[in-house]
Amino acid sequence: MITTLKEKVINGQSLTKEEAIHLSSAELSPLCKGADQIRRHFCGNAFDMCSIINGKSGKCPEDYKYCAQSAHYAANTTVYPLLSPGEIQQAAEANAANGILRFSIVTSGKRLSDKEVEQVCDSFRKIQETCSISLCASMGLLTEKQFGMLKSAGVVRYHNNLETSRSFFPKICTTHTYEDKIQAIQDAQAAGLTVCSGGIMGLGETMEDRIDMALTLRELHIRSVPVNILNPIPGTPLEYNTPLKEEEVCRTAAVFRFLLPDAILRMAGGRGLMDDQGRRVFQSGANGAITQNMLTTGGATVHEDKILAEELGFEIRLYE
Image (cartoon, rainbow, N blue to C red; front, side, top):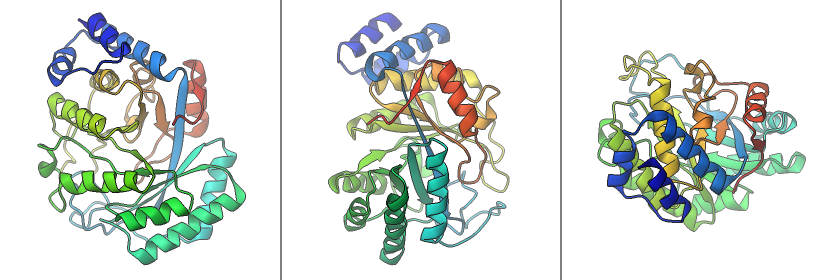
């Protein structure tokens, strides 16, 4: 069954939801091997590595049940307003000097004001004066006009995670809708930005929820997909969730590769929970990473990720 579905994907056909669900219960080792073969066929040895900066932290009005920055919960997190263009420029230069090819400013809140968007646009323009790192942004549910402002300032890609399936989303967030997210993604695309969108595994969702999310990403033509693993944070409603086992993460990544054959599956938050920093997942279809620290949790160092990518036969380069 794995071989039949792998050949179907390699021949340019899309799997159905029923096929993906059937695939998700297959024996793990051949499933991961098949996913890795699909990855090599469509993406070669590309390994897309990026980094982020927490450009505005805490006091977020959104009620994501996993988030340490939400004002609804009592998690211990740092709070500060939008960083200055100089501070952000300095961070971007340090990342570029370290060999990072993409750099994103991430901010808390439902969306930035026009004044704040103007300020981050100044940051992006300053970065371009001194380094050639590819620019990304993650700033909530912006308007098409604001997306256009980012595009004019040199931003190439916008990040907005779906987080989970449409049906499970209301159990994770009630302060905006799934349709709000999809509208923002489409508005960013209409402004000429590519979009990075994925989700968090281990929220309490089923494998069917993960498959539904992947199918929505496919419908939206998303080719950069962060795969986050819940790192339960004290003070949040999900603090007692049990982290996913490595085998479950590998299985999820492999199924995503069958459904999203030409995407970068980018291991992101929660990778530090794994003993091998995700090595097995990168042999199960994943081919990208957010390196260094996440927003409120730690991550692998650039040096560690470079060594890991090299040992697995990847080449660190931009993948569009």
